[in-house]
Length: 162
Image (tube, one colour):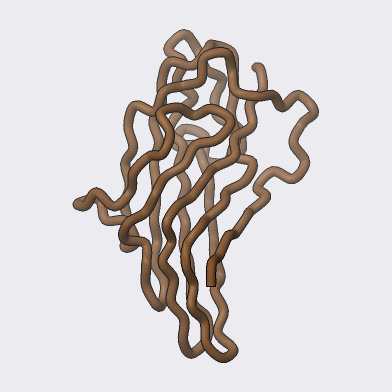
């Protein structure tokens, strides 16, 4: 079975939401951790050089039969000044096998390191840094038997001027 999950994180975006700024921030550092993407491995790879309208990663070790966690931390720089960004949705792709009454639950938590309670990043200044974006993903098998092998995640981003 092939699984694609879409999580609408901001169902009611403000009408001021726009496409990426004239100069989207370049991803300058990608750090990851968790049982599904150990920091001592090369199990997570960025699929994009910038945080534009979308960004994403591939996974090489996010597989199991119970639960795992993968926390991805994205630092970027060089965006046009005067912009904020938020994650509107996340799409995961991979393979899932379930038997009987088993199921798979997925949980995603998105936050900014310097403003964990805010949905939108800080306003980019002269350095073009929106802050550190953190996306935590946890698949959980419910029931007697199931397995998952997640291959990728794509983040849909929304931008607004500030």
